[in-house]
Amino acid sequence: MPDPTGLELIANELRERRPDSIAGTLHHRGIATLVVDPGHVLGVLTWLRDDPLQRYGFLASLHACDYLPHEPRFGVHYELLNMDRVERIHVKALLGDPGASELPAIDSCVELFPTADFQEREAFDMFGIEFRGHPDLRRILMPEEYEGWPQRRDFPLGGEPVLFTHNEHQMPRWYE
Amino acid sequence: MTEREPDGRVRELATGVTAESPPGAAVEAFDERPEGLEEEMLTLNFGPHHPATHGVLRLLVKLEGEVVKDVKPYIGYVHTGIEKNCEDKSYWKVIPLVERMDYLSYYFNALTFCMSVERLLDEEVPARAQYLRVIHCELNRIHSHLVWLGTSALDLGAISMLWYCFRERDKVLDLFEASSGQRMHTRYIQVGGVIEDIPPDWGRKVLEFTEDMVARLGQYEAILDRNEIFLQRTKGVGIVPPERLLELGVTGPLLRAAGNPWDLRKADPYSSYDHFDFKIPIGTVGDCYDRYRVRIAEIRESCAIVRQAVEGLPEGPYITTNRKVALPPRHELATSMEALIHHFKLVTEGFRVPPGEAYVPIESPRGELGCFVVSDGSAKPVRVHMRDPSFVNLQSLREMCLDGYIADMIVNLAMLDPILGGIDR
Image 1 (cartoon, rainbow over the protein chains, first blue to last red):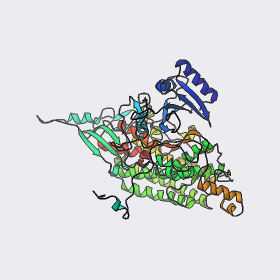
Image 2: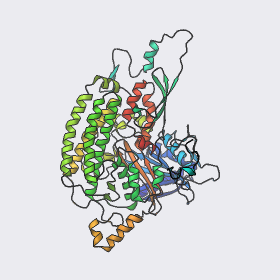
Image 3: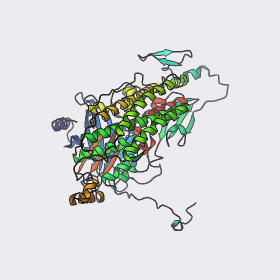
Image 4: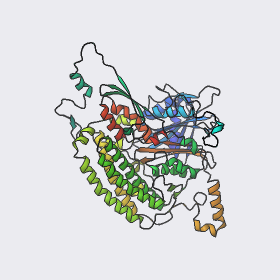
């Protein structure tokens, strides 16, 4: 992990190269977090991967999170790793909820990190986050015809009622 | 047939086919198609209920003759929404849930979740607890590799290996049963330590097992390493260069077999792994045979770690003494009002975790297993996500199988060691 000073240096360098790309930094419990603007996420990831002083070349994990009731609501997290120095940096992009039937969208990083393929599909499947430019953005864990985004916080936990002999008459012709 | 020299050069054998030239090339040489007949691609639905898919995995395979031209995995058949369910449980009740994700490495799942929560709590784990965690995790690694070895050899037709491996695996499960009361999904690792100290004499049994295991490993190798069928089916199969494996996010024995010695136990030691003397086995060619050799060698190293940890087991508490996190000892409940209150609060509400986010990775038998926990300050997590190595590693299956025979796909899949419970969660 970069120490707090190192994190600020990275953030400052990025701010110089791409104004408005960094929304903030956070160093908590030894984990360095870089909060980036969702529009600049590809640029920031490319620089972190290719800059000779950074070389965070391995995307360990990509996952999403729903921060309801906070705004912006969604977070897409990138866990980058420099294998030579064994340093990790946590890049986070926060996305607002466009509401109604629209999906929050962010650029896909499959071109940069092919490993993100399945993980972006999982984030799309569970949170309804659209990854622009993903080659094959389909549901991965839920059935293809499923409706709704199961891991959003406003999606109910309960499921279908379990059928027993005492309540089967409440669901007529259940056997069909 | 081909064989590789230790330096990676390809040696050509009688048939004139090298690993560099695809098997399709040999087929074309004998291609004497009668006039008017056409060849077409065959799309084969492989699974989800197929004994060689190691679970409920469906592969859509495009075949040209017997040569694989495309593989697409379809997953989600055992998706049970564990991550969603975790959000409705207090932290200590999440542990048995996450253990059921990757059902062959339950100690690892619990450990990575507990380490993430400990990171957020800023909680120190006593030395004895760290050693006990290491002992159980390494026994779990042996157990997981044994199941892998038995089922993979079964896929290749060596049915006797299954019985031998499951015999040894049962001994590991007996040890788990003695230390925690359960054979699988033991709920042994807790936030702040482990649930119970080991029973007297357990250490001796573990040492006996490790000695036995090392001897048995020699017997397994004697069965497989001189088996011509096994060698021909694994050597030179499924080679993907290590750079490409890294791009695809592959970690664990698959990456090490390709020659990259990346192992979090060494690179970024956690839970006092730096106290032990062990080696990281790596391969040279990166084919299925190397993957087999690496895992066998890993069992041997795990035995060495377990032996050192049992012999050097420090005295002291086995769980943190912070009463806000860990249950007070049972006997205190009868005499101490405070202990009773703590017990009541922990059992009913659970402990609260300060707001924050943490991603903590460990080395599971299949690669980097990470747990991402988000807390909002309440007693339930906002988000629990497992970066499961099987899920990520599965992406490399296509490149391993392309332009190989369909029979090699079975070997590739077996040596990938996917656990569908972990993939689908």
